[in-house]
Image (cartoon, rainbow, N blue to C red; front, side):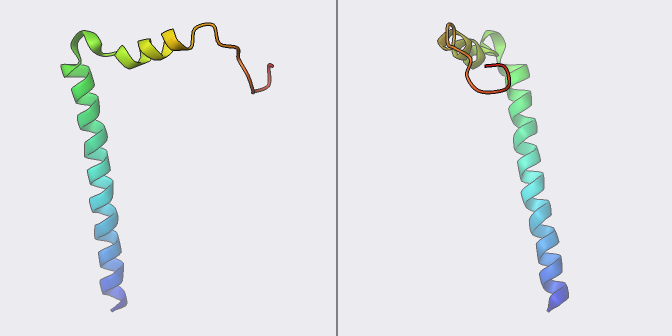
Length: 61
């Protein structure tokens, strides 16, 4: 019974890990190959929105 639980845990970790890895890889491929002109759309919008904000926190207040 202990070996069954051990095997089940290993398979579960592998399935979850491979699924997560495939998600990250496909997201990267989709952005880089299929992104076109809008690759940095969200980064650009975030930068525009944060323009003029004060820096808070950290060591250099």
